[in-house]
View 1 (cartoon, rainbow, N blue to C red):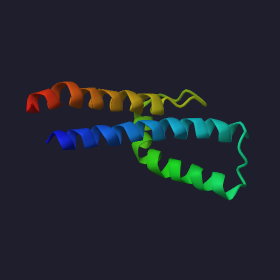
View 2 (tube, one colour):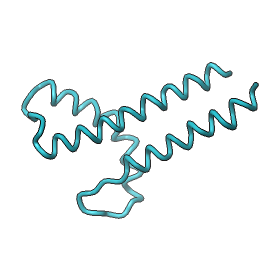
View 3 (cartoon, rainbow, N blue to C red):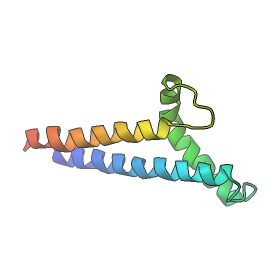
View 4 (cartoon, rainbow, N blue to C red):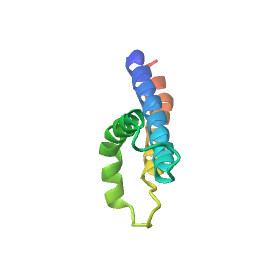
Length: 96
């Protein structure tokens, strides 16, 4: 059972970094730092969008419209932090 919790924590950690990479990539794309016509850049952007958008879209429905500011990645990172901390501090010690 501990192996399952460690695997879940690893998946949450990887998702954490994918969300951060997606946010940074969206800023680079919005400010034309990266070449949007480059096939590799487009492929990376599409992959990051497809991984993060199913998780961010439901959060965006509940957040107020702040113009160009998207707070949904921050909310999702807080949720991931809570789940990770809950697994490590509450569930794992109960199983040992």
